[in-house]
Length: 521
Image (cartoon, rainbow, N blue to C red):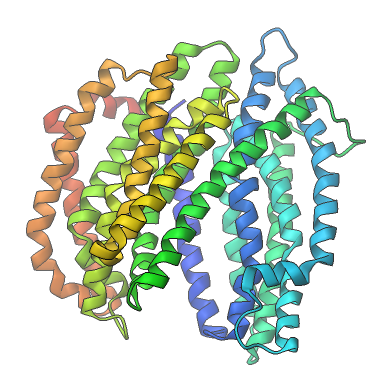
């Protein structure tokens, strides 16, 4: 399989989803504004998003995909039919649990909303009742997105990555259509329609994934629950993976809370804006690689192809470095013009740009480790080991808290981002050491030969961008067309220098280019 090609399809669809998300947020601000109505919707939307992050996305896929691929790849078994039978067993147990959970959350929507919002500040009984109503509209999304996760994991295992990667686009498109077609002069009505649209988008995603499974020869339907050994093992694996995702969420909460309580006003905004920029390469590269590597490695291990799995992980790390190192250098050295072009207008002034660029540089130091975690953890998940990554994530959470307390006062708004970056580096080092110690990963000669060349090419690119940014900075304060043009010139110049550097230094060869051309043909 062409790993770069698969990553390109997933990353491209993730980029499309992110762009549509920006459009959605812009329209939401236009029609709802910053009001209690918008706060109520965002709180109602927080629970589905949190549940998706903790369970439906990473935890379920990490536990299900290796087990499914082991069934499919077992040469002494029934292949794909065995995998489908396992998926049906999982669905038969998962669906009743989700239905009961949804009913419970609907009944207790009031205390749930209270826990997420603290009852807001200074709102009336009727206003809080409105927030509870919105929560009740969004709660069904939890059940729907969990079923989507099951079907998407099957398609990822069959290497139909783009189908699952396209599903979040339906969420953004549905919310955009609801905003355009059903907005109202009363922001409370528009917020209510958005809450309804959330669950509608979950249903559309479920239909999309189910139809795609049918088109690829996979048809599963609910039956009487059977809590067999395989399902019990799956449930036992899910909770540690969910706990690992929870540790990441807690890291973000701790950093933000400390910044809000100890730093000057505006510091939380600097950190948030910097994180949004830093998340772009992380989302496009890290999520894409994690999505592609886990099913491929688990399939290879299930088929007894340990050497092929090692080769896949080496190429995954090489691809991560190829794409991440230039992004890291660019964000550290050229954060000023990037932040200015994106945010510096209206009440966001030049001082805000400088502070946000500093926070961005601190975040970006850890960008390689953020993404390498996505490359290394499939080596554990594919072997049904979800506990070790959780243990290391918990350690990194403790490191993050300690470094926050040490760095936040002397470095101010740079302290929390730098603490997060260093904690992620610790996590990466622990994962890498454990895989090496177990004999599950070792850098091959090609990776060792190319890694330092990629780093040198990225530094050369950074030098050119450093010299160019002074010329381009004046154009980052003009109209949106001028700002966009300046960013395109900066990206094009950096990309050209980096491409030339990789060829000159031998990090990327003509043979690689010819191989990609053959695969494209």
